[in-house]
Length: 167
Image (cartoon, rainbow, N blue to C red):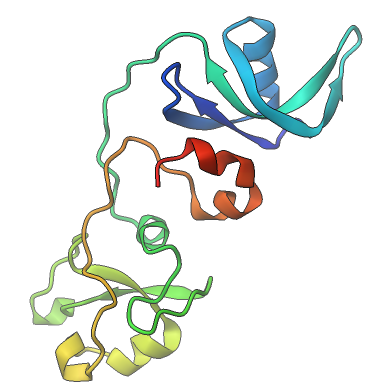
């Protein structure tokens, strides 16, 4: 119960990070945060009973520099929402495909890397999408840099978070 994820919002309701229930309760006890969403049960201590929070908001503003997201497989899959960019099938078994193959001068960049299911990746092989007659559903581009994103698998588990996250 103490290791469940909790969405932490800045004072202006912008998402900051995801912490665990244990850390969220400490912030609440120290009056550094307030509960916005709860209802996943209770946590008992020797002296008190706490609702297990799902979303908390800090009572003070945190200034954070915006960081550029690194190009990794997981980041590509999250950007594309685990959807094959050739056939549109949503699956957890996706691979990374270079739109213009690297052996033909394609670079390893956000604009040239997409998620593809295994059958589509095999069918495309070392060809371009035009040669393989497999157009992209949408153009590959760098992910939005809003400073924070929620890993895709959390969105299905915590529906109450969606109203606090940018679309």
